[in-house]
Amino acid sequence: MIVEIKVPGVGESVTEAILAQWFKQDGDYVKKGEVLFVIETDKVTLEVESEAEGILKIAVPEGETVAIGAVVGTIDTAAAPAETAAPEAPPATSEAAPAKAEEAPELEPPPTPAAAPAPLPEVPSAVPPAAPAEMILSPAVRRLVVEKGVDVTRIRGTGPGGRITKGDILLYLEQAAPGVPEKLPAAAAEVLPVVEVDGERTSRKPMTPIRQRIAARLLEAKQSTAMLTTFNDVDMSRVMEIRSRYKDAFQKKFSVSLGFMSFFIKATVEALKEFPAINAFIDGKEIVYHHYYHIGVAIGTGKGLVVPVIRHCENLSMAQMEQAIIDFVGKIKENRLDLADLEGGTFTITNGGVFGSLLSTPILNTPQSAILGMHRIEKRPVVIDDDIVVRPMMYLALSYDHRIVDGREAVTYLKRIKEFVENPERMIVEI
Image 1 (cartoon, rainbow, N blue to C red):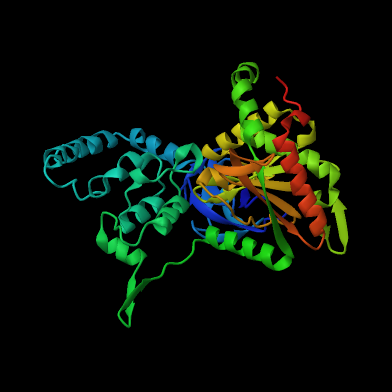
Image 2: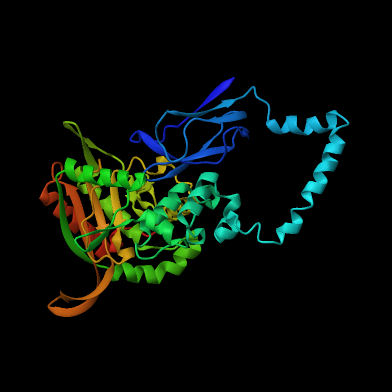
């Protein structure tokens, strides 16, 4: 019986993916439940397990873009593993013993030249990092490592179990500085060939498929919405004071740290209740209003920004919100983030302040109608009761779809968030 291996559906909005890496080779005997290959979308990497036991036949090689539901290989469940036939052959006849006896002298000479430089040209010596990575690198990835002269000790694997995928190698090459060659200068020249025109030197490199998808989605957001951004600033004094005063008690009771994000999620939900259009989206000629609050929190990764969604924040305590964020960060590090974790958001919060951003204009996470941008906290002189004082201030930015959200609503909404954060007593901290 032949069982088809298909690319699984990973979400309503995802129509294709990249077959990033095969963990088995063509002709291998695979067992049910074993990981066969990994697919990558513009946000996450997903393992695909075998649904049957038998001999694997690969139809689509690594690196190809495949449609959801496409057949990338088959499993012959009637075929027996090749390993069972091999051990039965030698004991079948008495000639097997002399055959092994003849092989023994042939196996002894290699140890002698083994001390000689014969093994040195092999991959473990030519590319030192390849030796420890031998157990986790697929043949295709190893070929790319050797071809490009990549030092894999500089790369953190995002594949299952920390394995280095082909996408990791390509991303590393994409981000490598043009003036910093790898161990093999010739290989670096292949990645970024330098062209001189009128005395000026330039280099070109193709965008990775994942980067192309991210670019396409951002461009779509700009072209399909009437995006506008309004700004305000918020005094973080009270939040910082409360956080400092209660962080130990909070940690002791809930076994999780009290961060700034939970304050902003809480303030966001309370403000959204007053301005339902900001928690809605346009579907054709209709506006869909959500009576729940699924808040996406943007988290930076090596492959770009991912936005896991914390569901029903209106029912969560601040401790539960903080725990949800920690769980998502752990999933991202261990490459266990599912597409379901990224879908269904009604509003997004992004914090450029963790990277040092003072002020920015966030782009909408379509089809949502708004996104809140947080920034770094910076001490600045402000006027309070006619006195000039120094306060820890943060700029806030709200980008919104002007087709559904009016300017008055957007400005008032952002002002409400400012009021909640500057007076957190209005929000209950469960400690």
